[in-house]
Image (cartoon, rainbow, N blue to C red; front, side, top):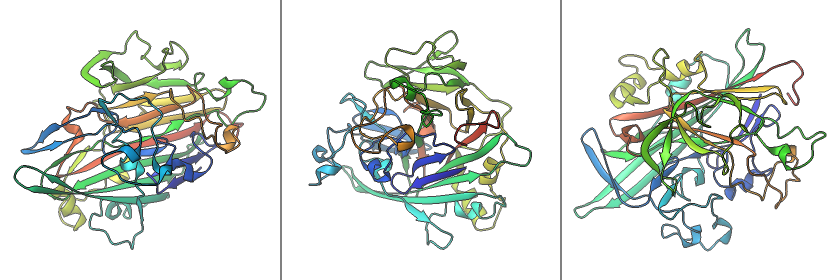
Length: 416
């Protein structure tokens, strides 16, 4: 199994079994192909526009998410004469909503690739990774955010270091049906004393059949509605009319949101799925911690105190998946695990209709894109804006992951 990862937004361009991610043919087109296979941050999903006060562990600060402007050119936080950069997301959002960190989120940044020799003041991943004796291919990228905020009293400086690890793992001995695994690990550290919002995920769209075009006709050949989906969730988030979460949750039992290995098309909502699912408790499952105490992390990095190698624990995990996506047509099963509280399930209800990969039947040119219902976006992240799990203080290290295991059902799987 192979994967192609781009520095722009840590974009996972391809997962090459037969390429199970939708997207443009040309990697450069991700610059205008918004929220597809990229990292999402500083804050995943939707939050209310306007001023918020956040508090955790004695720290307090104000933050002001901005609306997803009609274009970057008109955005008050961006000045550019290049119309090429003036893009909009496909989803028609309310002006009351800030989506996925806005148009200038972490997905829009070009992340720096790190090697063992790259100088770094953060070292959030490498010190543990290179003591992990496992066969794998990997990429570590870094983003440094330096911002200044004015208050009535003073100017507050904020330095936030972020690192992501994308690792490919081969099947373990005896795993005959496994093609391989991909792990994405997110770490962040707030250098200056205080607290900051952060909620990271990858907004990647899976279609296990899109490359199988033989004998197909009509638009439904790109649909994921015949995929089977299992989400081990207990509740879904209730939404206001503008799609902001209300803070309340409804049980999934007996509703269209009870995905227990059913076909996605069964009970498919009129406007598709765009819902947050809260996972059922997993009391007997060992999960990587969401946060690592900064003092323990620094001591371990310096070779003092108890050794921390949470990376190795994630790589060697044998947890049962919390989400399973299957296709009888392609014979592929994709299992997902994460230490995060839940996920957003979105069925590409507002697709980018400009670009489509050649292997998915497109010419790789403009104005020939995907259709509604053409992907299962599975975005693992924390729950609501009121949760302290979406806040990071300077006393801790952000530590979340998603693991994807890909299996074949038979020896004769198309494209593998």
